[in-house]
Amino acid sequence: MSARPILTVSEMTAADQAAIAAGAPGVELMARAGLAVADAICDRFTPRPIAVLCGPGNNGGDGYVCARWLAERGWPVWVERTDPPATADARAAAAEWTGETHDLGQGPRHAELFVDALFGVGLSRPLDGEAARLARVSEARADQIIAIDIPSGLAGDTGRPLGDAAFWAGLTVTFHAKKPAHVLEPGQSRCGEVVVADIGLTATGSGLIENTPDAWLDHFPWPSAQSHKHARGRMVVISGEAWNTGAARLSARAGLRMGAGLVTLLSPPEALAVNAAHLEAVMLKPFETEMELEQLAAEVDAAVIGPAAGVSESTLLNVLALARTGAALVIDADAITVFRDDPEELFSVLDVDDVLTPHPGEFERLFPGLLKASPERLTAARRAAQKADAVVLLKGADTVVAHPDGRAAVCSNGSPWLATAGSGDVLAGFVAALIAQGMESFEAACAATWIHSEAADLHGPGLIAEDLPGLAPTILRRLYAARHG
Image 1 (cartoon, one colour):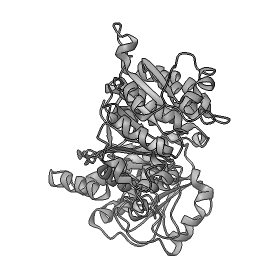
Image 2: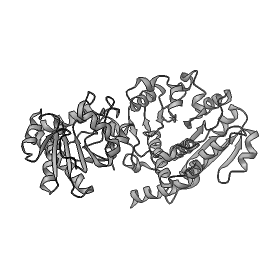
Image 3: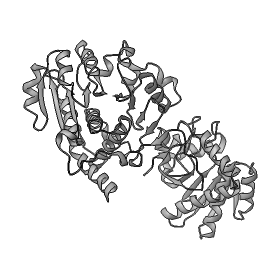
Image 4: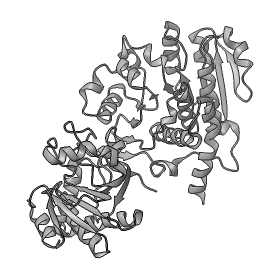
């Protein structure tokens, strides 16, 4: 299995140019692209009136090819264009189209489907005129719209509308690889189902991938017949005070479900009784000072600190104590916020085995202004990982995992059901458990994020964080079957 690359606009342009230089004419690539779109439409719909909206560039050229193939297959189809074709390849494609052609918005009114072939990922200006009008009404008809490459009006590298109007689509057919706009919000939501068609290109990108099992399943830490609990990783979670213990228990239970062999909740003495009343397979040990914590964690593989830990001096000292142990740290919630006045104090003790798991508000506390100054979340997360010298898992509908070396993965299976208290605590436990079992921290963060979302979707409405650890085994069984047949 191999990771699915995500290409920027410039990387995709270079891939096209390389293919042409290697002997594949541009018009041939356009023919393959248009056929792929027609195939995707025919796979999902029965013939019905369809309008293909063509712009003047190569995206429009793809549209003319698509229209020709649909007509040959018996579809009632016509073209509506903004302007005459402006590139040689688009002119060649338009010359082979012999069906109805109208100005944009002037075609028959009975279309049941629309192909958006107006502008591709290279658009750099806002939509205007009739194209902008159609974009504004597209949200209500998104399930009727098929976008070629990208919904027109979106910036290919950010997924953001270039002006006040951009198309929505129920299906987007892109070529060779997804682009950032297909996986970053708000573009991801506007693309609908994304189909990646192979048109014979070979570019692999520069370290940005889609977070799917293809990226990490070959390295997932399945137990063998010889495995025992001590070989499957030792993980600790730091509990909060007596009235704030539930979040840490969520992380601990999540760690067990994700396969960590030994999970221990390290607890302040005053919280021992409440924790003991709720724990079974998770072990429990007390500590009073950061020195005692350091000693208890001296031989562990991974540690979670932050869930309901309290924004206090003791939390700060506990983070620094854990950093001295050599355990991989998963730092979340309060353990992030406690360093807001001096982020460099935290960065100075981190290394590439550690993982920061902020939501946008916590990210702002450690990296003030970075999100706003970056063109999109991907760039912000990459810069943050370099600054912290640690893996950064920036949570959201389009969660980004970034490594200090520049690698990054974007999760496209985000689940709305995760918008519930405690879900992030479970995610931290998933990450730590995979690291404890020997998975590299970047891959562990990617795998945990994907499994977390899949588990949430498995449950759907009514999900609470307590449900997530118990849902994980079903997803793990699917992954095991996929890996081992």
